[in-house]
Length: 531
Image 1 (spheres, rainbow, N blue to C red):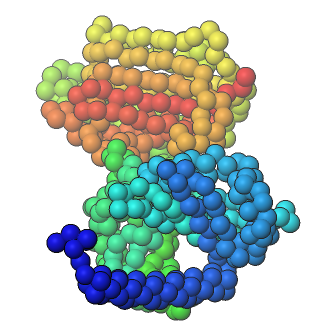
Image 2 (tube, rainbow, N blue to C red):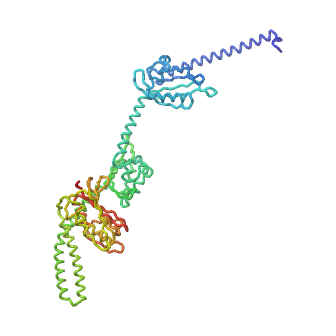
């Protein structure tokens, strides 16, 4: 039925219905507006009482058209909402100049939807004070996913930032102190795991801190077998809550196989509330100190042996002289008895060897204080020591440069010491092989771990091609009458090396040895140089 065919009553009825619908819509609209006013007022009151403040950016077609700053902006920035409204660039101009590129990049990221994470930057308040703020953006999108607005929460966290920076600086300071300490520092937690190991561990052991952190048993594993039980027991005890401090020395084998002495000191660590936090330990490399003590003891032992040897040698020499005289007379009496003559000849030869030994003892006892003068070590080797080496199967190679520094020493004692080492090398090669004697200027540093003061030295190296020194025998090679039982060779005993060692020590020098079985032996002599 068309509208023209409707009756007046029907049209009146429809009009009345429409008025009811419009009235209902108007009522709902008023309720919505009232609710909106309530929510808006609540939002305004909340933003006014919080110490932080919120700004809102309204968008049209992807472009910001209006920015509204909450009242809290005054307390944080010193600027009022009206000042922000009247100056469209105040928001970026108040940003600290160095941070403006960061802020602009972040705003661009928010507008493009690629960066909506909170970020921190500095602002300059109206009164000139520099403050740190945290900006947390909250984006609003329409049904199509387009950005229509975003809010930003501005928080002033200057005091927290300063406290955090102060804490980081404090931690950095103590970390630097701990990391750059010369000793190997460690902190073992209550659960037996390392909480900290200083970088010096690598310098002393060859193992990085990370290796100790990954394996708490590593320190026991690298301990010398003779000390392992003691160290393992100590680290097990360290897991108990007690107030005792511990100090002891032990040996380790570094990653490169070098033996080192470590002085270990540890004490319990407690927190502010008295809670036990484990043990902190300091490990100091005392290898040099131990070697110095051993060297000093060796020198004193040699001095004591020298005094004893001198007393015995003089009496023994008189006896040998008497024995040799009687043997000589006996041989004249029994000239025609070949068998008895042979026996007397053997006895005479043995007595002559005993006399040589006696002379060694007397020489060892009579060394005395060296009478020093300036010497050329090269000339001393050529004139005094080199003639010692002779033999059809033995070759001598001298490497003596012309620019050698001088030394100060007793010519007689030094030539005897060098000759003794060369004679020992000759015996080691059984008269066949190559003996190389080389001399050079050298600088000794503390890190070289030699038992002499750092400085300029003459280094004399004597290398043979003999059978070498068996493993473990090198530390005792300079002991008087120390015996080396080479395979297929008789025991070799004597005072040659002991005399050489003592002489070099009396000249403020040192002798070291490097040897490998089947590859020969090298003696290195270091004597203080005079430039």
